[in-house]
Each structure stands twice: as structure tokens, then as C-alpha cells.
Image (tube, rainbow over all chains, first blue to last red):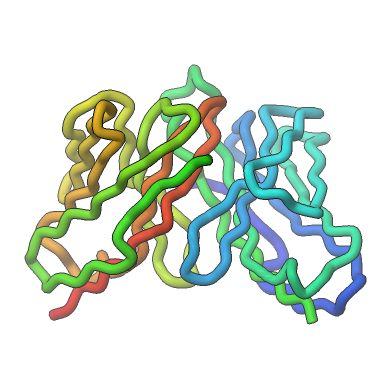
Length: 116
Length: 109
């Protein structure tokens, strides 16, 4: 059973507010990822990290930022939320290439964000 | 650009066999994965093909042909609980995934 958590699960917020979506995993995985998924659509990678103090932008441009100060924690921040940010945000983690399951990503339950 | 194409929807009855195809065009390729996602749920890993051929895991099998940039997921002995969306995903490097458009599978009694 994968142990990856996201809070909050649902968030409704007004335009211009600053928000932070939390993601934590207890598996000691080096690699962590943030995806954005609209209803019925594919997942798009917006940020990823190979380890502490490592962050990279994904394939889909995003106004959000991330940080990786601790292995287990990978929060995503939006400085000024807009209606266009309304979506589901999924966090995932995976082992390094030397692990037994390097090709499997474990996903958290997601945060469904609505910006009014 | 990068693209992974899948049929948008497939319907089948309980006990049947269904195949979901995936064709891809990506800037890098290390392997093809399949994920299942129920409505409102998180994606869960089903299978991975790094080499050509068939991988079997219980009722699910996955196939890859790198020369054809093509793969498929085969689901046998369908059950109602298999109704979900299925995504293929290419590992493009450094364990990054590019996901396909997704196939919604509807299993009826």
C-alpha cells in the first residue's frame, strides 16, 4: 500500500488568494511529481523533483512553484489564484532507478481546486 | 511534440475480453506503462513494458512494439469493477511520464 498524502482534498477559494497544496510520502522515495488533470482528460506533468533541493518544471507550463526541503514533503504554491487554475492536482512519487519498482509512480488522492 | 493516442471510449460486457490500444510519438522512449483511474480516484499502476513483447499480470496483459510505436492493454474476464479510465504513459527519461488521452471503459452486466 502506497503512503502518499495530499491536503486539502477539496479547496474553494477566491481569486487573488495565495494557496499551498501539501503532499507528503512516507516511502522514502527520491522522486516526486505534480500533475494537473482536468475532468475526463489526461494528466499533465507540471513539476518534478529528483531529491532534496532539486526541482524542475514539467511539460505543461504552470504559474505554480514547488519546493523540496525534505525528502518526504513536496508542496505546491500558487501566489495568486485565478479561475484558470481550477483543476485537480495530483502528487506522485517513485523510487530511484536502482529500486525494485523504478517504473511505478504512486499517486496521492489529489486536491480538487476551484477558484471563484 | 509528444502525443499518445488512445480510443476515447470502449464498451464491453462482463466476462468479455477487451483491448485498449495506444500509439505514441515522443521525443524519448524508455518504456510504456498503463494506469487505471476510477472516477474521483487516483491513478494506480497496472503494468510496464520496457522491451518488446507481452507482459502478463493476472487478468491484465500489456504488449509493446517499439518498432511500431504501439502498445496495448488486454483485459480478460471483465468485471464490473473494471469500469474506469485507462491511461497509457511513456517514460521519456529520468522517470518522467507523458500520459495518453485516456480510454473510458464501460463494463455492462
